[in-house]
Every structure is written in C-alpha cells, then in structure tokens.
Amino acid sequence: MTRLRIDLAYDGTDFVGWAAQPGKRSVQGVLQEWLERLLPPGAASQLVVAGRTDAGVHARAQVAHFDVPDDLALVPNDLATRLMRVLPPDIVIRTVSLAPPDFDARFAALWRRYVYRLWDADSLPDPLLRRSVTPIAGKLDLAAMNAAAAELVGLRDFAPFCKHRDGATTIRHLKVFQLEREPDPCRTIAATLISDAFCHSMVRSLMGAVVQIGLGRRNLDWLRTIRESPTRESSVPVLPPQGLTLEEVGYPPDPELAARVTAARSPRTPGKVQNVRQPPKRPHAATT
Image 1 (cartoon, rainbow, N blue to C red):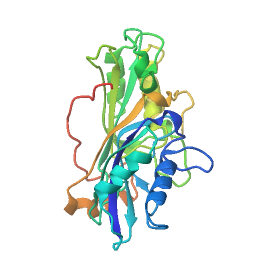
Image 2: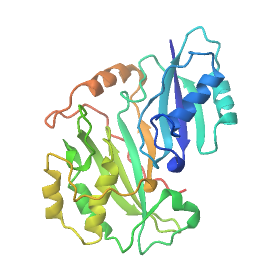
Image 3: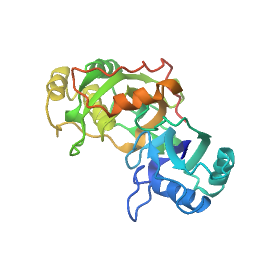
C-alpha cells in the first residue's frame, strides 16, 4: 500500500466534528465520501487524523493520511485539484502528497498547537470574524490568566479538565500555555496551547478555568485544588467551540517517524516524560 498525506483546513461551524457519525455532517464523512467517489471502489482506506476536533472547532492546518494500493495510477497533485473542485467551501485541501511508510498522522505527531481566541470588554469585535472568536462579558486580566496558565504546564493527569472515555488516558504533556492580546484592530486575546496531544474538551476546559480567574471569580488556590482532582471537575466551565482553532501539527524527521509512533502508542504515566522535541517558538498567528 502507498500512504498519502492530506493537509487541509476547515471552518468547523457546520460540522459535528472531525469524526464520521451516521446521518450527521462531519469533516471525515464529507472527505471520505468524495475520496470514494473519485477513486476506484475500495481503493482508499479510512482516514486517520492528527486531531479529532470536536463539533464547531476549526482547523487551519489539520493533517490526515490514508492508504491506496501500490498499483493505483494516482498523482497526488491531481487528486488535490479534483477534491477542491467538489468539496464544499468550508473544507479546503492544502496539499495531497506521498508520505513515508512510517508516517502516521496521529501517532507520529510530536505536538499540536491550538489557539483559542476571545473578545472581552476591551476588544472591538468584528462581526465578520464572529464564527472564530468567543465573546466574554467583562474585562479579562491577562496577567492573572497567564499566572494561572503557568500552573497547568507540564506532564500531568488532566482528568479534571477532560471528558472521561473508557480505556483512554488523560495524561498529557502540556508544553506551552500562554495568552496575549494580539495587535489586530479587534484587540483579540489569543491563548496558545501546545501539547503532545489533547484529550476530549481539554483545551476548552483549561480556557474555562483561566477565564474564571481572569474575571476575578476564582483564584489560584481554587485552580491548584482543581488540578489535583482525579476526575472531571464540574466547577470548571467548558468554553464554546467556535473560539478554538487547530493551527499546526509538528512531526519528526522521516528517519524518526517509526520510533515516534512506538513511543506514542506506549502507556503514559506521570513519572515518564515522553522523549519529544520541543515545539518551535513562534509568535501567535494573527486572527483571520
């Protein structure tokens, strides 16, 4: 089999998320449907994705892969062009390319970078951007929020901030969590979070916690107590999905892909830090 990599972006507003669900509109479902129409019957395997975004969450740089038979006469650039002709406007294919045999969009990823965007009382909202930013009633204290965010960085069990799934670990290595007010005309607050992986609702719950502190409703002692809880904490609000965007996924060099997949599949414990590369330091992406 030949492995193909798809780099894509989408507006998640009208999708139930990435994952295919019977009778519902999902990114995976729409993309898989058109792959099956454009390729011979049974030629395309199921899509595997870097980040299974939830309903309403956007992606500027999502990555997926699928396999096709070696003998299939297929030019990846041609497939990308054909997909763009038929896909709805809320999905954009950046590239379709040949991937190394050891590439795995999900397990080979070293880190994912998400940005959550907010408008508070000091912002100047733009109605044309309302589908990608969450409004907050009140003024947010960024210094207090960054102090709270620093308390959550590291390798730990994020069970207090994740929706429970049977058999799934909630141990994650959150490498970056910082907020700043972007220099755009809207004065948007952008929170950047980088981790080896994220569990279900983790980013929106972390944001819910620091927003409570930014509004002065909670303090650091509350957060320190919450983060030690072994289960999901109901006092932590989950922010709406529209402010969240998957901005980037990082992968190792090709010779290190197989080792990374093996490491990612191994059980994680709080005392075992994964041997992963640091994500690149970069300025926050501007709101678009």
